[in-house]
Image (cartoon, rainbow, N blue to C red):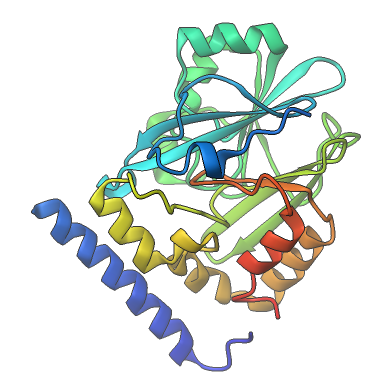
Length: 280
């Protein structure tokens, strides 16, 4: 599906704007985990703030709710243990004594990964607990005004190529458009793809009313790219499609993302369906 005129962009922008207006109105007024069955009715996918095994050397940590723009949202961190025992925390969630203790049983926290320009707000707490860990940031993150104001440390910038620290085990790619960048990781041994916001799947009936309303209008209850993010990605259509095709070619068995019921099986087919709005 190509964008041949500004009409499609305008239509998507209007849909995103309508969603925001409605939200404001409402506010004014291998041991695989099967998240879709067990946790679909739970707004924040409990148990919270504890590592849950997904595959060998891969765990998720469900947390939240976080409240971007005042909208309650579940959020998820992914933990990968590298061959040397180092732990990589992808999209770190809130830190706690219990979570730190649980992670220290698994390995040593050495890498903190902020994979896009939005998922960085909990970094400061993890940096305080693990001052020797390297903090990796998505392209453009260190230059954001909010990041500079918060004095969050970004040690190294991520790119479309995996750094030496994990390239033997994890492939890496970059999806980038105007003002947006998301770095994905692909854990080769378990064939697990790790995303952040590119795909969301907020379908739980127990979500707060404001979140359900936003999810319906944004399209995220269907397990796809939010409409408001599609507007941005369309701006660099050719580059984005090339990046998404390369990602699909990895043929993941499972796909983890930060918000909603992730794809525990049939990962490639479900990811292709999630991206059908842009890849025929």
